[in-house]
Length: 142
Image 1: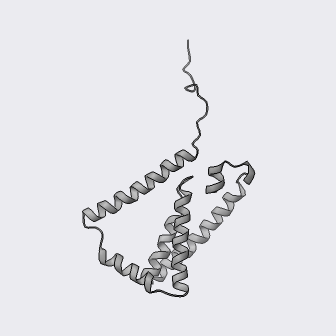
Image 2 (image 1 turned 90 degrees about the vertical axis):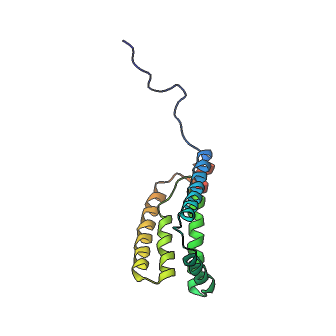
Image 3 (image 1 turned 180 degrees about the vertical axis):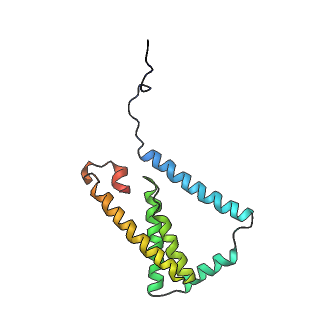
């Protein structure tokens, strides 16, 4: 009686940075396809987008700084998508929505989720390997 092989013979497979680039490409393609579909089916309102940009452009002081920090945070999450897609990027959208509409409940959602996310990040940082033992992709994204 023969038993089936437990592997295909090439050993353990692990994804490295090239898979991360493919993952980042999928994110870009999905965002582009979503924008295209919204434009094709008239789901996107240009006036709302124009108003949001005008609010950003006309803001000053602390409000402008918060806008810039949220955009910088979104860019950081986008770059970290090479390693893994982080759900915390959606938290930034709550903050941006609050800045656009001044609805306080979205500010509360943003603050609570940011604190919770920071606690999870501290927990994950405690489990990470030493910096000099990480691969290049791990050191970049972690």
